[in-house]
Image (tube, rainbow, N blue to C red; front, top):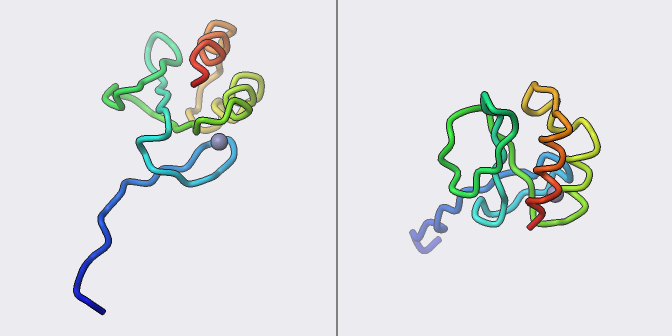
Amino acid sequence: MNGKRPKHVPVRTCVVCREKADKRTLVRVVRTQNGLQIDPSGKLDGRGAYLCEQTQCWERASSGDVLNQALRMTLTDEDRKRLLQAIP
Ligand SMILES: [Zn+2]
């Protein structure tokens, strides 16, 4: 023990693959009154979920119901399109 604490890095979990990653490498999506919004700044109010950088996670998020469950909403076609357009 050298008394040093490891630097605190906020970690979040991708809702699709369940892999934990540094918050900065994940993209937040938020349920808003206007449907699902991509929130790169992480500042939007509302129930949010994180997706990692893998294209397949975004594809699965847009085609499956992972986000419906995570955000307790029903993705519209618009929402799904928005996800596909936002693939990192
Ligand atoms: Zn993922």
